[in-house]
Length: 313
Image 1 (tube, rainbow, N blue to C red):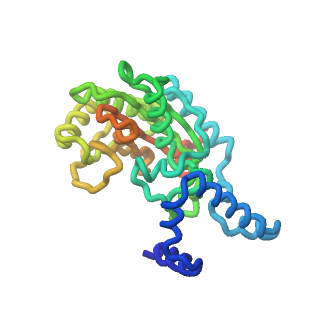
Image 2: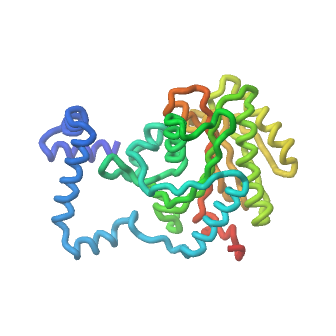
Image 3: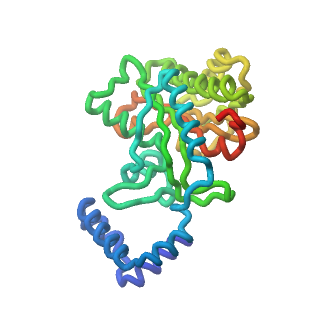
C-alpha cells in the first residue's frame, strides 16, 4: 500500500496518472528501453562527483561486503569442484538476467529484484537463469534431457532488493546452486534420482568434507496430484539411501506456489543453509508438462558469517 501511494504521488506530480499504463501499452520494449536509457543519461548528467560520493554513502546496494573475498572464492571453487566430481557441469553465468526472470516464471515480487534498463535486471537467483539456459538449449536442440537428465552447477554474486534485519548481511552475496533437468519417466523416476543426487552432494560437502551433522526437512507442497503419496515415496527413497541422515516430513498445508510437490531444507548447526525443491519453470518456458526441474541453493557468505567453515578454508 505504501509503495502504491508513492507511485500515485509521483504520477500526480508528473501530471499523468495513467503514464505507466500508457508507456507499457503504446510503446514497444525497445522503445521503452530507448526512453529509459535517455532518462538515465539525463539523470546521470545532473550529478557531480560530490553527488556520486554522497550517494555512495547512503546506497546500501553498492557497499562492499566485509567478508574476505579470497575465502569466498575458495569456498566457491571447492563447491564447484565437488559438484563437477558429482556430475554437475559448471556454468559461468552473466551478472545480468532478463527482466522478469524471477517474477514471471517463479512468482517472485519484482520489487525484490533490482530492475535495470535494456530489458534486464541484476541477477537475483542463478537457478532462474539456469532454467532459462536449459529451456533455450532444449528448444534449440543443443541440450537433450530425454535419455539422461542434465545436471548443472553455478556460483555467482546475486543482488536482492528486500531488507535484511541483520547488519552482517548486505544485499549482494555469493550463491551456489544446483539444477537438474529431465523428463517425466513415470513412477517418479526422475524425481527420486534427482533429489537423491542433490542430497548426496550436500551430504558429501557438509558431513564428509566439513564434519557437520545434517538435518533435512521435506515440506509438502501442491503441484502433484497425489501430493501425500509423492512426498512419502520420496521420503522412503531418501531414508533408504541415506539411513544416517535425520529426515523429517512436514505435511502442513501451505499456499506456497514456488515449489511443486516438495520443498526440502537442510539445517546445519541450527542454521537453515540449503533450500530446494521441484519447480515448473521449464514446463512453462517450453509448454511441455513432461519437463521436470529440481533446483537447490546454498549461501556461500552465510557459511562464513556463521562460522560454519571454521578454519577449513
